[in-house]
Length: 188
Length: 192
Image (tube, rainbow over all chains, first blue to last red; front, side, top):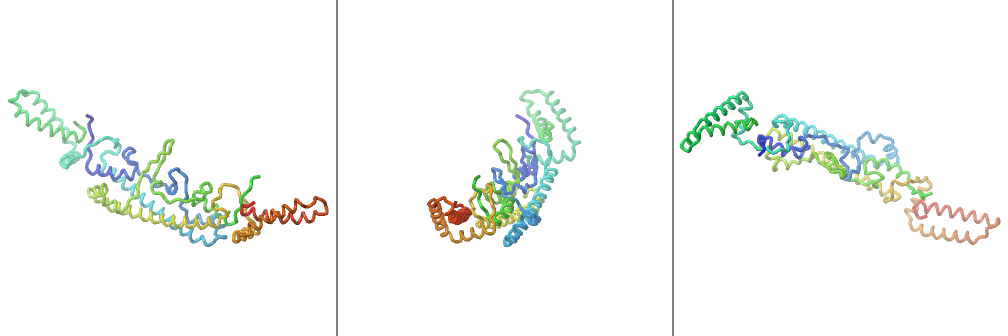
């Protein structure tokens, strides 16, 4: 069976939330700004209008139109005002979203460049404690590896008969515990 | 030469304005409501497969399923998400107001068009002030149209019955002038 990566509970929960607001796991959870130009596009891609700007209303075609039909000026001015609100709100939303995605990737993700589509295991609370400890103290890893080799050598030197099984048991349990720890760092 | 449709001076001025805020002449100046997904969509492939890169956040979502679990584990992001949901609400309300104003404006202005169902991509002539007056008169009194048509047939019959000699030329001229005027009027409303 292929070895699975492990992730923290926080990272697993972040995947679910980011899925809806980014390009998703297949495309590394990239966040994009909105294309306001596309807001009135239909799925068959014809554009059914634009969000107008106040300065648009000073263009010749609008000026000439208002000269002949001044009653429509307040409506179009109101539309420009609402369009401005849309732009501001979406800009702010995008800013917050981009900052959030960046922060989550930096603070919560362990590796931003992995294949996020690969299967993973979520660390239990006990595993998380071990993981954080080893992450904070990476110098603990070589002694663990050395102890593992030592234990394996001891086990190899022991008789393999039924009578000595209780003697082998504590060594085996210690090996399993070390392997579990090292697996969290893909070191076993 | 193919027959050109007539439009009023107002209609001519409305076209460039509508071109920007609707689907344009090509699509009969139809409008459509704002679509949140379209702003965050990309298309690929021969069939224009759409991929949506973001969804709108609502306040209620934050207390529901994935969001609730996430915010429970990382409450430091709650404020950011609440602000994002607020901005979505503001944008949505503004888009809705923009849409309703636009729909009303487009509907209103289309009612003033000579033919709201025309193919707007076709060439057109703009009414002169005189033609505009005739058009408005016929539009306000459509019962005048059958009388004009009848008079046009009557004049044509009279013209056919008249000798083609020089003596009857002044009478033919008067009748022809009247016929031209009637045809011009009928053309304005697409009846000739």
